Amino acid sequence: MSIQRLNMRKYCFELVLGLVIIGALLYAAAERQFTVAGGALSYASLVFYSLCFALTSFFLNRQGLRFLERIFYCFAAMASGIVLFELVYHYAYGVLSFNDFLHYELFFFGNQSANGYFSLDWYLIILVVPFIGWKYMRVSKTLIAVIIFSSAVMFFWVATGYPQFLYPQWFPSYGPFIDIIQKGNTNQIVFFGELFNGPAKIIAIIPALLFNKK
Image (cartoon, rainbow, N blue to C red):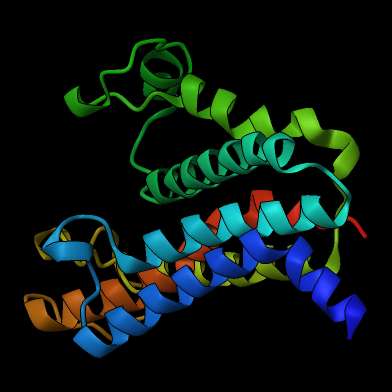
């Protein structure tokens, strides 16, 4: 009993985060809402980004890092997870030519993403920041399984025409390889957009799983 109490006390912060994440999931399910307050942020994003933070804290706590020390890694891992998803999501469109990639993205050091630029250089910098904790990392079976699962989700998402729940008018972004969505059927496009978007956000926890070192 004393050992269990000690573990509960040690992982109190992570338990609280876990309860908050579960609460967000239950609220979204009860209200049948996919986005937070009807905005562009989905509950899937909120949950998986928070889960990345919580898992990083848990894995580093298990390795003996103090609270303040691991909090910085948590923010770094969460930011890395966010941009990792954005990179995968952006390049899944596959619409840029090689010259455009070199000129506008790889060598663009501004932050005018709203003006049509994709700040690849900054995204890559953010992506690799968690690797300052390289000594706390390892490749695990869980990490490999999540990579395989998320790759499969992205494949089927793109193969069905890459439906977007916020922008159903974009469908199909590609000629569908798997023809299951009726073009012009907004409700169906939104449904499949949400169906794929949610599980695809698991990509965001990949940086956290790198710290799963027992």
